[in-house]
Amino acid sequence: MAIISSQIKISCASLAGFPSMLRSPGHAPQPIVSRHVAVIGAGAAGLVTARELRREGHSVVVFERGDQVGGTWAYTQNVESDPIGVEPTRTRVHSSLYDSLRTNIPREAMGFRDYPFVPKDDPDRDPRRFPGHREVLMYLQDFTREFRIDELVRFETEVVRVRLAEEEEKWKIKSKQRSMGLELDEIFDAVVVCNGHFTQPRVAYIPGINDWPGKQMHSHNYRDPKPFRDQVVVLIGNSVSAFDISWELAGVAKEVHIAARTVIDETFRKQPAYDNMWLHPMIKDVCEDGSVNFLDGSIVIANIILHCTGYEYHFPFLETNGIVTVDDNRVGPLYNHIFPPALAPRLSFVGLLWKAIPFPMFELQSKWIGGVLSNRFTLPSQEEMMEDVEAFYSSLETFGTPKRYTHCLGDNLVEYNNWLASQCGCPAFEDWRMQMFLVTIKSKLAHLESYRDEWEAQHLVLQAYEDFIKHTSEQVS
Ligand code: FAD
Image 1 (cartoon, rainbow, N blue to C red):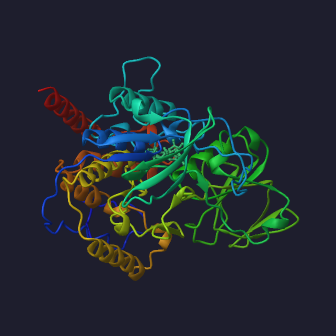
Image 2: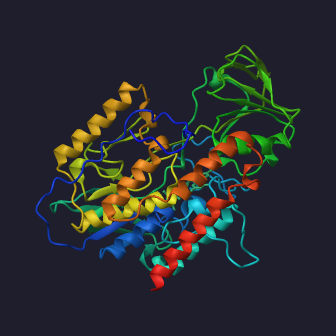
Image 3: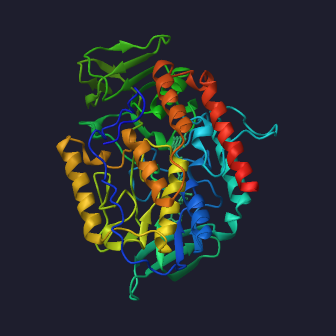
């Protein structure tokens, strides 16, 4: 397993090994081909995938059910009809962003390698190192314009079914165009799934919840703190979003109680600098009288439980005859989190990994997919890929890593990205990018509320900009 060149460990259950990343066994070279490829989703993953596939010579159709690019970053005030997000017939909203959200990765590290996320000389733009969500959307819009990706996108067109076609090794896609009410069946050579995985709420099981009289909400439907004024809120979770939201709530709510799995000491801890925020271990159960009982024996009478408990992978359109399944948030079997061995290379997934630096990783994953589809890069045999996946799963088991952590990249971030880069013949993952990411994690732990405005590692920024300038001049020359 790779050791990341830093003292800081990215905390994640990925203490187990990672896929062995087999080298291609030297199959006879195949002729280079162009394929007709469907990309599902025009978020950051779908946009860069479209660009890389077209660069590789494939013909590309991007299906996007929304009316704009950006996916998660297309913030909306709208929320779903079921605030906790479990009712199957609820009205759906894609984005999970809240109004005050700023990035949790410095912009220089966050952007695509081939299209740096640098501040624009424009008063309408947000030049901060950790900009607000609107700036990220504008960056993705710039990317779309720059590489004319919008000409490949069919907006307001939802993919409702993807299944193997009668024709050998082809896919049949059924899509629905909203405004014209059109339904279309089409045949594609390959499908790349880029539908995002922060939309389908994952909810904590709480004994007694059916009789508890308060309200429940998932952070997917949290936009701003106004509805929480003077309320007693119990927030479950300990992700970056959970902490961002808890501080915001503390400004308006009567009390905020955070229940987190990571709290192991048996205390009812008041948070420094707040007179209305406490940290608890997990909830034991809840009762009809409105009480919320925590594992340490403390009790709170609360009005609202806010689940900041993450999301589930969800592919309601995908029919693979059971070849690809989702089991406790493990999408599999997938070779290197991208290709299901039995359907490779004609089905692939971009962006399943978390605890990652998403945009540049999407870029490398899609470059690799593009090259594999054109036969420029060769995959190992189906059996070898399957053996690799099985070895990976058994290493997770050996280390006691739950299935739901299968796609947690964490400590393997550099190793994984460098492997992809080597497969694609690209330069390795930049050291400054990784260091910026690690510095951010360290400073987040030390100053959870202010780390975004206290950047000190100026030398890393300089290295980043030297790289950007070098890259741009290489492109010009
Ligand atoms: P999405 O952005 O979710 O895009 C998926 C697209 O697919 C959507 O446009 C959707 O409409 C479309 N779609 C879905 N199903 C269908 C269908 N059946 N037919 C047609 N279209 C479909 N990342 C960072 O790098 N930095 C951050 O600071 C950061 N902060 C985050 C904060 C929050 C609260 C969340 C939820 C995520 C954050 N992320 C952050 C991660 C972020 O999700 C990724 O950076 C990235 O935007 C994911 O892109 P994507 O294309 O995979 O998915």
